[in-house]
Image (cartoon, rainbow, N blue to C red; front, side, top):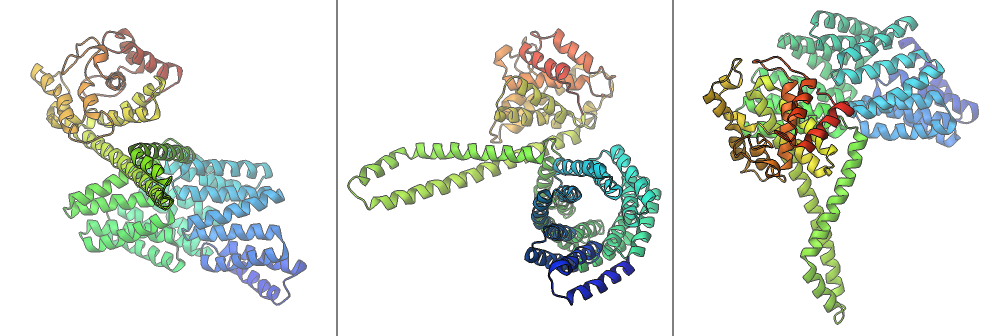
Length: 606
């Protein structure tokens, strides 16, 4: 590669000595773009200079192909340095030009690059959509190199989503193609990804072998950014083996390279790893310095998965320092961001919902504010008839109304995020108390949410059912661990103790100002339709509908999950149980909705 770069540089020097016009100008632009593509990983700043020169010259000569390639190159070099928002802007420009030129390879390459940006930002649904589009076009034009590249990118997304089997499937397809066509740079990338996959499977010997082979290829190619990545990955293996000294050495070597390359993503990642080791070595001041730097960079470039990792590390740091208030604060931020990243909804859907939510909130808040101030507005309108000078005052008041509406909107959003974060944290606390029912509340919440949708609940009430379900067993925190994990039959006294959890949950949650009837529903979730439940023997519609939904979802989930004191009856038995007791123990409308969700719409627990 070094020889190829040297040859291209000599050609470029010669091209620059001629006037930039006609064929010579276009040849110069093509050289700039070709040379930039060879250098972007090891010299991204130099690549940006080539890309800028290419774009300016292409616009002057009206060379649209060169302009598209230059914008593509600029986007790639920005992405290599972690500047994702800027890179996306250049990729979109390139895409528009390639579509205009009907250049399929260019269109597909842009899809692929945009997919990489979405992947770095943890917007996985959008990322895989872009990579699948790219793969389809590359297969159509039979570009084997880019087919392998797309397969590799899709594999990365499956790995990040913890679907290791699918990830390995795509990685191996890409690896075989790269071996067939002799693509050494791509082969190094494939070996690197196979190493990461092996590490996640705890096959550390194979992982180290893959990364060592990848590092050797990258050193032969002079790929500095690739070398930095390999150093960091080898550091990860030593970290997994609790060999902190060599791990720290590799992370520092990687950090030194990415700092020279101004690769912000790489800097953030290595600072986070070094901060983690500093925590283990009880060097808390140094840990805080590295983690704050990592968080500042990851937030700035929109790398949300790195940002969430930083929140988690900062939570662990403050926990180690004994500052549990800050530890809890950062854990809430981590939990909230992870919930957002790994939601089943696509980022596009979330964005649409957010726009609609904000619009509705603004309208409601504005309407409420105007109603509260109707007397003031009437007085202003009356005075306007005789005093023109009050026109200015009215305008001022209206501006204040708008400002206050924005403030109220922001307060509502912050409150909503805080409440959701609190509920998710409480849910995790409950599961840590009773490991045999780990994930129980989340599975109940997912089924309860779908039942609520089936019953025609609006979005706010559906969200309420989901959130309340996440903490419906909060009262179990007061139950002794030996009773919760008992494998045999409970005594009468122990059953009475278990039955206190509804009341305890109510007492815990009644002191918190939730926007939903959380405490009341938690109190009633063990009440049964015929009045045989507890604690207050409520019947039928005396029981809140949300509690009746959770009661059905609770029993279905319990019968499909393992417990130490019995075998798993399964989903079919669960449907049989609720159907048999419909109108007796359970609300018949809720039972029918649950049956439709499972039997007709194919719901199953994850």
